[in-house]
Each structure stands twice: as C-alpha cells, then as structure tokens.
Image 1 (tube, rainbow, N blue to C red):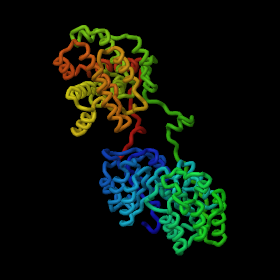
Image 2: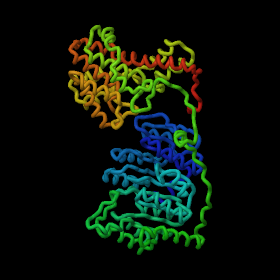
Image 3: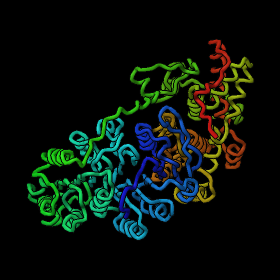
Image 4: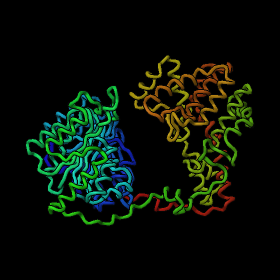
Length: 608
C-alpha cells in the first residue's frame, strides 16, 4: 500500500469499458482545475480501436481507444491509474490484468457484487506489489484541484459548491460514495475544504481500508486534519483504533461510525452496503464510536454533531497557526453542451438539410406526415404487379399485400440515412434525377439495407439443419460472421422497432405458417441474453417472413425458393422500395431550390 500521495495534477488514467458521462465529468473537472493535460490518457474497450471524441473545456479532443489493457499500457506508459467500469462479472479479471502491468499503481473498481474470493486475490496481489486498490463497489476518489475518478463528487455544480476545484486542508475517507458527497459539502462549509477524499466501497472486503488511507493522509504535509466516516458491520475501524493507540497518527482525526439506529430494530438489519450488517456487539456503531473516542479521535455524540466537531477541530488548528486557510479563487466557466443549451432556449442553431417528405423522429417513420401504420392499414400497393413481373405467377392476396407492406415500410426513413443523404447532396449539385437516385442506391449493401437475402439464407440454412439458436449464433461467431437481421443502432429490447411489430402481427394473422419467423424470434431471444440491442431488425423480419410466404403458399418448389434467395429477390424489395423515397428527396430538393451543399468544417474533427 502506498504511504503518501497517490494523485497529482499530472496524474493520468486509463478508463476501462467506455462510459461517456463519467469520462466527460473527469475532463470537465480537469478544465475546472486548470489542468494543462486531460486526466484520461486512453480508453480500453475490448474488441474496439480508434478514437472517442470528447470535450476538454471548449476544445474537442480525440482520446485513443485500445482493444486490450496491454496495448493501452504500452501506448500510455505515464498513465498509472486504472479506472474499471466493467460489470461485476469481468471486473476481477480485468483488474488483475491491470495490476500485473508495471505502469499501473492505482486501480479503482466501480462494480458492485464482485465475488469476495476474487477481491481477496486482488488485495493480496496489490499488497505484495505495493499497489493501491480502491473498491470494489466504490464511486472512487478525488484530489481537490488535481484529479478525480469517474463520477466522484457528482455534477460540476456540486463540485463547485464543495470547493473541490482547489485543494483544502482536510483528508477524508469513507465507505460510502453517496455519503462522501454529503461530507464534501459539509466539510466545505466549515473548513477550507478537502485535500483528498476516498470512498473505499461498501463491500465486506474492500481493496484498501479506512486506516490505509488515514495513514497515507498522515504522511501528506498538505493534509492538516483527517475526517473519517465509518459504518456498522465489519471491524475495519479497529485497525484505525490500533493505529491511534500506537501513536502512528499525529494529526487530529474526527470520526463517526454511522448505523447507531440499528439498536432500535428488534432483529438484525442489513443496511445498503454488503458490509453494513452488524455481526455482533463489537461490530455495532456504538462500540466502534466509543473505541475511536477512547483511542483519541474526536467523536461526536451523534451524526448531527459531526459538522460541529469538524468545525471546532479546524478552527482550533487555525488558532494554533497550523492551518492557513486557503484563499478563495473563482473557477472558470464550463462550456455548456450545445444540445442542452438549445433545449434550455439559450442558443439557436441552423439546420443543414431541409426535408418536407418524411420524418423519422417519432415512434414510427412518417411519410408526408402520415404515420407508417396508417399507410399499412390503407392497403394500397403494387404487390400484384410485382407478383407477375418477378415471380411470373399471381400470388394470393395475403402474399401481395405483404409485399406492399414491405415496400411501404422500406420506402423511406428520413433525410439522415446514407442513401437519402447522398441523393440530397447530388440533387443540390444540380444533377439529374437518375444520377441523384443512383448515388443513393449505391450505398445499399451489407451495412445499409442489404442484409435481407443474407438473413433469409442463414435463417433457412440453420432451421433446416435443425440447429438450436445457441448452435447457430455461436457457430456464426466462430466463423467471424455477424448474424444478419439481428441488431439495431437505436432499437432495443425496451424500444422495439414498430416496423417489425407490424410485420409480425400481419403474418400471425394471415400466414398459414410462420416457422421461419418463430425460429428468428428464438434466435433473437438468445442474442438478447448477450446484449440489449441485439433485437430482430426489419431486415431479419422481412427475410424470415418471406421464407414463410414462399414455403407456406405452396406455389414454389424447394429449388425455386433456394434460387429466389440466392439471386437476390429479397434485397430487390428494398431497392425498389427505397427508390420511391430517393426519387422523392430529389424532387423535394429541386422544388425547394436548395443550393450546393458543403459540409460545415465545425462538424469535422481535424486530428492527426
């Protein structure tokens, strides 16, 4: 365990498992403190590489993203703090990997529920190698005016109110992250503020203890007094008692152990933290408070008196000349994000594209103001024509109506998707209809609208081979192939695609059999166990249901069905449908007499 200061104004961290908000909060804190360099050197997102754009004050910066811990440590050898936002399932393994990197000195584990046996292994390795573990189940820590971990101290407004943008004279350590915020505010009201604050986490076996950090504070010259907030359960506070009795701590300690109300309950009570459960009289808050008081700590009679005890101790040190209160400074203004400024009515910004024919911002796409479901329910379409020209036979009405539904659902999806954007830019350049249309059609492929055939082909093959969803998905994974028809950028388990629901409802009502769709739904059930956005998308819905249409109608042989899928009939539906929308966008731009489009340079991150 480190014996002194573990953070500074030059500390940089590696952030594991990308989370935009806590990283941006760290960078905003850096700017507030006047740091010259961002505190986040790199991001580790397993399986991903590249850059993430974030703000450092008014400047937009690109932070490198690495796929492995080893690669990140090699690329950023001066980053010695590892902030782990992994889930409890992988937090221990990733933390151990980080501890084994010679560049890492401090690890903060945010996750709750890390198995105790795993935590003990991390603690043993860290102590054997003189490294610091904060957590698990922690919000992190902060050195005022220098460095903070993730969401520590909450919002910028709270940080300013707690005067954490500049160093004070108080070292603070607590088990609770939530109560840390409360105490940062309390300490700022009655002293010159925090120098360093740590929340060790509420698990039974924290990576570092209250006394570990109190002993560190004792060796930091800028820390003049120490505030400790413990809680009932466990015996961590007794190591602090022993340190006080042995004279290892030479600075005033103001302490309180919360949980005195537990005696009011007739039976044992489990409070919020895993470790906040009294296992006997010695683990009660009352006995711990008395032990700390007997060892020489300043312990009030109640939590309500805690603030007064802190204030009196600080004022005494000022009177003795041991503390010269820190002069107040005015922190810089953090720039407000544009979207929040627009929402609050503080600014207005022009749009770059005008569209009058479609709108995809609501629950379902609308064409010329008419919701998709209304278009579907009207029953208009050219399904019979397609039946004759493509399949050379007249299909039953339920089949042709399904084709019409597919075309209506796929005709357009707003001006922002790839095909429409290309068509709009081409039309604004004065090009003719065919050039504008083709520029949009050329974007159709495996990443945009071209997965219907593949979805049908893979679902059909898996179903006919009798593969379980597990065998199918894992087999595709081993081949390095993403399952076509599964996954969406904005839709999820809790935000289903209205188009998929409409197609499924129609098929259940009219189709003789939906065996392929039911198989696709079984696959979706399995993929949703892996990630919330791995839902059946519109490509997968059309692909599987078209197989049901072909097989259930009794009008196609197996060879014909295989040929239809192989040739690309199903992607043809998308091409035909989207052509309607692309032509409409071309006419819309010409009618509006829109000028040549040039992408604004403010919307481009120029970086090396």
